[in-house]
Image 1 (cartoon, rainbow, N blue to C red):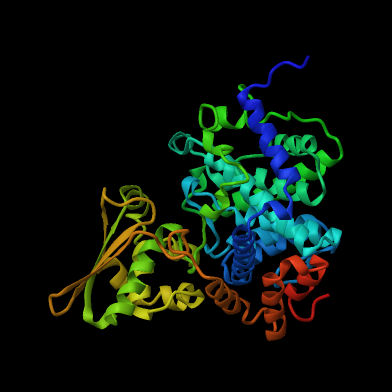
Image 2 (tube, one colour):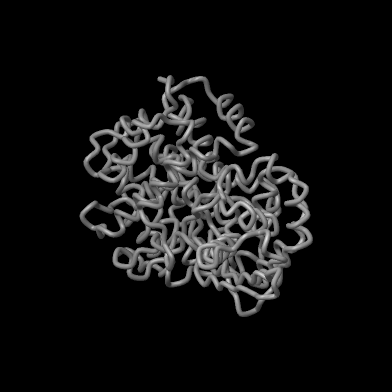
Length: 459
């Protein structure tokens, strides 16, 4: 007789079976469609990522990792499977516009979409195969994240993309490769052995390293498990050095598996319409509401008083000075000032010619006031526009644009993709990609999608 399973072991087995055995028919239609949104949004972020200030460095790094050219770079050329996984992962996060699973502040698109595309293209997987694998990867990662005691996790300094993300990456690759539950559990063990990344990197672009390195970690974990390399099949819950015991000091919360296959945690992944920090999204949403409702203009606005959560205030209160695109995008003061002045927030707002404008810098530093408000949480914000005539206009953002409570529509994501694709893809390819994603289940081979996503003139 086999010994009884512990609850912890059942958690690992449950997630492994789910990730390996998920079928198209078991996924509700709304979840399939939202997963298409996640994929399309990730592609838009990647195309926009060519305007990231560190993109040329990562391009050279990725190219140096291997000389083969079997895998496509989104909006670029071909690299090795390793190089494309890393570079596509970086592109998706390069301009701070990718997703965030808010309960653990974890970006999952760069970690999961990148290796999924690489393996699906290599193997000639169908669009339906890719779609189901993406659901498997996103839901696995989101469930592992949902099981985390986040205050304790954060207290210990861990950063979600590099610690939680590799499990989702291993799941998406393992599903595409047809793993059984045992092999998937091994892949989780190997993913966990590489899970790393702390908030010591926060405040620098190296936080993005956690994301593309997490993508590579999951890819390596799955491909090594496929070779029957032996690893623990209980990494998530092992009492000595397991994920939950080590990263947050206890067992997984019930949410890790509760109603698995009925409740879909991936629907809690938020998207971002604008290339700026997740913390800025509520401010941006409120400001655009004021612009739309009151025709708010900078020349009539004496100052902005911005109320944010206490945690957000402590993290961003001193970011008045900035040098470079990334620092500008991480400055709440600058982001608010440029939205007010330009009534727009896209790539041009984070170019040197804009963020170095002396008048705009002065306004950001002297006329934008940041306040901590204990009544606010997460990215919530209240923006007060104090006008030259003494009146005060106010907007309260309870849920920023792109969150599950205030979602981006498919049409808005398509517009985001079109804007990001300008200058990288031809119009015909842009529209072909949009049509393909909308009917992803009908795609015979992901290779045709990746052909359309490469830059014109590359092969």
